[in-house]
Image (cartoon, rainbow, N blue to C red):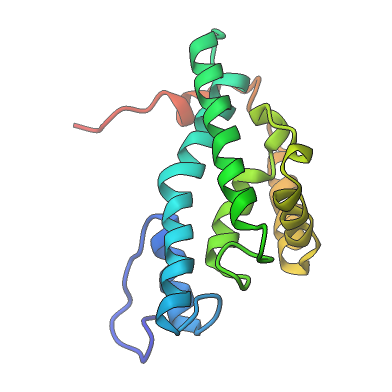
Length: 173
C-alpha cells in the first residue's frame, strides 16, 4: 500500500521500485537535497549505463548463439569504462552516494558477475573494496544465496526454452 494508506498502486521498473520502497520506508535514500541528488544520479547512472551495458557484455560473451567479436569487444570495453567511473567515485567514499543506498543495491548485481563480463576487478581497487563491503552485508549475502538457489534449477547457457523466453520475445500484437 502507498505511504499513509490509500489505494494500492502498481510500480514497474527496478529503479522506480527502489525509489518507491525507499520513500515508503524512509530508508536508503537521503532526505537532504544534495545527498539525495547524488544518490539519485548514481541510481539513474546504473539504470541507463551500467545495467544495460553489463547485460549486453554478459549476453554477447556468454549466451549469443554466434560469437560476434565486435559485440563482445564493444560491450566488454564499455563495462571496463563504467567500472573506471565507479572506481573514481569510490576513491573518497565507501558507497556510490556516500552512504549505503538504493544506488548500491541497484549496482551490485551488475558488478557481481564481473568475470562473465570479461573484467578483472583487481584493476579497480576502490570498486573491489566496495564490492567486498557489499558482499559482507548480511542482507546482500542472503539475497545472493537465494539467487544462487533459484539459478541452480536451470543452466541458462544450455536451457533453450529459457533462452527463448529471455532472448527471443517480440511485442504482442
